[in-house]
Image 1 (cartoon, one colour):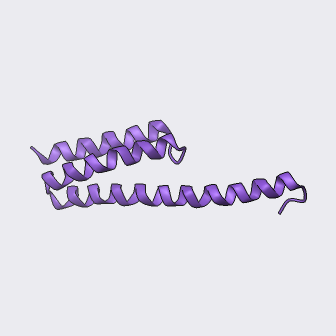
Image 2: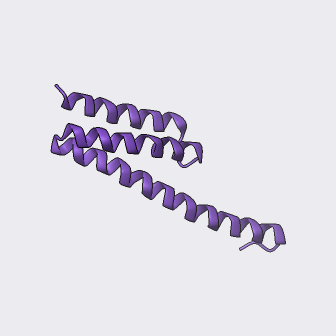
Length: 88
């Protein structure tokens, strides 16, 4: 813990942001997991709906700094590619 007032305030802010980011990361993982489960199950229709729900959530996480924007784009691209392979 810091000694100065500003250091104490910074520690409080970091604690608040950590909680928010943990929640966002958890949501992100949940949405991604739903898509991956649908892909593993071979259900294309469920995978498409799960991907449609996951994509904005992934990009939102990137906008808020939980993920880098290129990482988010890569995740979406890979999931989309896997879902597209189900149709073949």
